[in-house]
Length: 388
Image 1 (tube, rainbow, N blue to C red):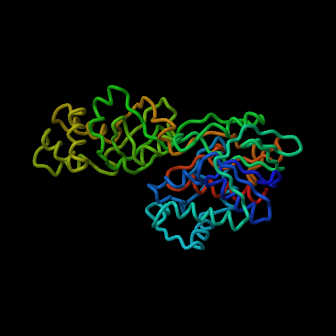
Image 2: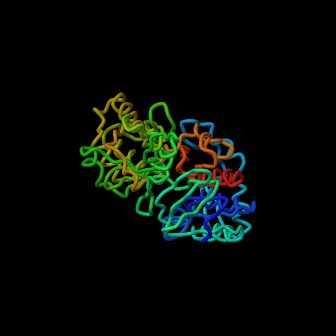
Image 3: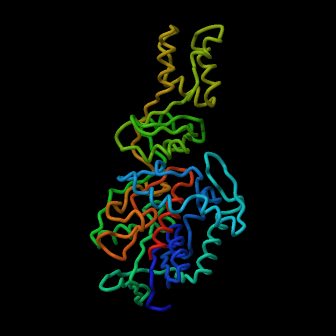
């Protein structure tokens, strides 16, 4: 391995590999240092192993950040159709699952192989099992790795966040930001299942495996209409993962268990208005086990019209006060990270540390579920690759 490079990239995930490809294509001598034993580990496990590699409807509105406008520049410079062209060039077959989400027909390994081939064609050098002991900056960045030292005028941090530590996630990127006095936004687990309080777990956790369509929201914030899943500890499924990114840790999560359904209109079709009729209606709307448990926990206060109206309101606005989330171990991404005010929106370079770049999940830009986080990785990686 040479000691002198034009660009050193820390991390061989989606953002780091995209940056390496673009920088290499521009004739730069690029070294990618990956502490794991293979590239693209998070890509490989994404989308149930089929990699939801982008979303055709991507806009800045699909991202959470202290600066909601920051992502616009990179997302405009590298669009979903740009990555699709790369996928098609390599002959990878794909399909749209729903809501603009594009998945590989085959395996997520197809995307990793594609990126590996693109790196090779661009002359990128990738070193695996690279333990980084120290990073310093004088006239160049100096990285002590594996008993040796490599140097470059540009250093790109693409080390990801804290989510899924079992595949190697660490705080290295945040620690490096602190070393160079780069500000951080507080980090938290996002796109993550929620955990019931102990009393709620006793009421609901034996329904683990039951799934139903809901609208999940937090007061005054975003609402998501998708599937919800009961687990042995709380709630999961797309609707819950989505709203978890917006949950402040204190307010209730409000769940509409009968989205778009006029429940009392169904009741009026019954010959009688009594508890038995209400139970039958609930079983039409909800999975049977959930319907029966809901009735047990929220019985109408009598047979009067008002009692059933109140019961319907409860069904449309179940307030859940989680005890917390499943944490980084089950989170798909990490929210927060390197403060975007520290970076150029066009190049991802630090304003106060020339030559230092942060891209991908380590930055305070977090996508919703559905391919948006990969599109941010491609776009931020591309932007940095064009500037290194």
